[in-house]
Length: 370
Image (tube, rainbow, N blue to C red; front, side):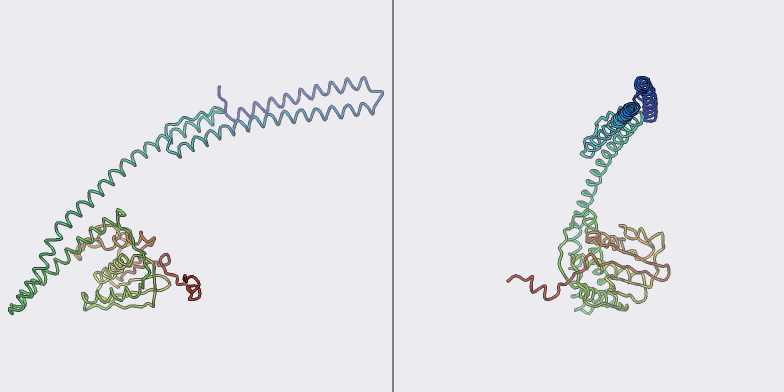
């Protein structure tokens, strides 16, 4: 019958108490006998008594030590069993049995461990099956979007190309400007549709980690200048203010260009006033004074297909900030958003992880191979 630790300690303590009392009685008997025989020689009697008391204490302490050693050894054996069991589980060797028999408490620990590990094993199997299905779904999604993009790419290119030729020829014939504007609209919408297809495909690739980064050192300030110049061609009536000095980073230039372009485009779309772009204290910030974002929407704006207001910018698929978020994760960066409804938003990125630290000229000279 297994006992709990409390009963084991109590029984051991009771045994030691009775054993000590018995030993004391026996010692008292021995001393009394010596006293009767050696009462005429007090010095020798004192020596005999001292020897017996010393032997008594050594004997009692030895018994106590043996009991404590046995108790601790049994606990250590049980703990070693637990350690070996957990090590096997860490190696994915499920279905193991653990025999803890020293006390009721250890037996209870063993049963709970087996129950918990069994549940974890079942959950892991479900997780593996779910991950396999999710991986298959992502693969099928990527293939489907790739096929759609490929099938629509050629017709879309043809529509844009033929529309441009048609516009040029009709322009030469002096056709009414109204009809030329219709053709311009076809070209513009064709390009927009082509861009949306490219963004959708890119978003899927980034989400499934199918995009290989190509790192290089480049000037972020020069990159922003080029992006702002291109944006001003499309948003001719808008003002984009810039405030930064030369700033170099080590990252994928193509993807970082997408990040900055998306942030500036969003700022222009959802505001009517000026847009500010700055690099300060290792942070790039894009600020607008537009409609702002509600607090309950802040955690969702970086999700695919999520739009803050479905009634605005119907051409948007809600992929811009999702793509930004994916690209930043690949660079170990994060997008921080501060916004107030009716006053605007500030999108910022801490560039410290990708900041290019230039070596002093002396060190560059030393490290340059001859």
